[in-house]
Length: 382
Figure 1: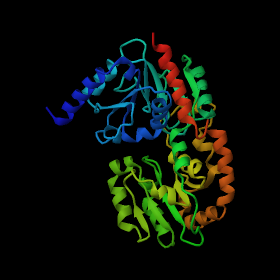
Figure 2: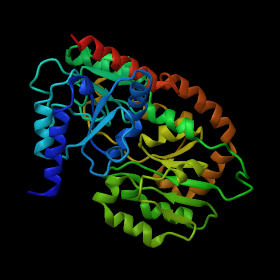
Figure 3: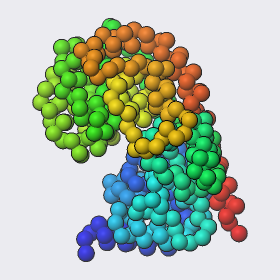
């Protein structure tokens, strides 16, 4: 029997052996990055409410397995049979996840009656274009990022005649963390130093790096910008050829950053180049800096998204928090970046305005989410 399987069996047995109160609220993380979204809620539950929680993770490298905060019982359940059985037989009052498509693929709701499933959004984008049609239909509660989620979910429920879920005006934990950790703007700024550009697009067959990576490099090569290129992990996994072409043609002022662990390049940059990535909203709202959106084809996982009248927020907000450039005009990229940087102060005020309109409880989402989950657990306890 493989070591990984033995570990998942051992940890699953430890999980089921916890006292009921210690797993009344059980979190599941598909990957280690989920802590960025769940952590603010978990930390508030344990520190301010004194509630112990269980934390199941499918990532063997999840830092939570090594340094679990006080009150958090962490377990590795992998991605195979043990995880499947754990979900089918889950018997807890509240289960919290950042993974869409519950019930529609391999992970099912528990056969036990009474578990309340709560979804925490791991992106600020809309629910109906980038996600699959039934991505959220089988959850009982959604901790919504902003008013756009409320409108989209309620309209889908009406159009599809679905039962109403509980929608919580929550916010976005990762945004709160970025705002808390953002550095002060000490030291020289552009144009007294080279412009720092972060390229961080999403993954898509027609995406920026997949289709226009070499043209992007060509457009930036002769500039004096400091450029960091952060491909989406799926781009690195599915299109290593595109990554290698970029690596082979970069100038000395360019860095290819394939690890998502470090946030230094994000925090140090002056402007971001994106496409349809939810990371663009995190960048703009978290650092109050503009984004230059390259207008590649939209990322659509729901071909029927236009049945809803709501315009996806990632479509409507682009011209408010940055500017849009056609991929056919990449030769204009240096000028466009300098123009955005020159108007950074104006963009900062616009971004603050749209952040308040787009995101609930900025800076306080962890407290809101923890209060709701604590109430759910308390109501489920005899």
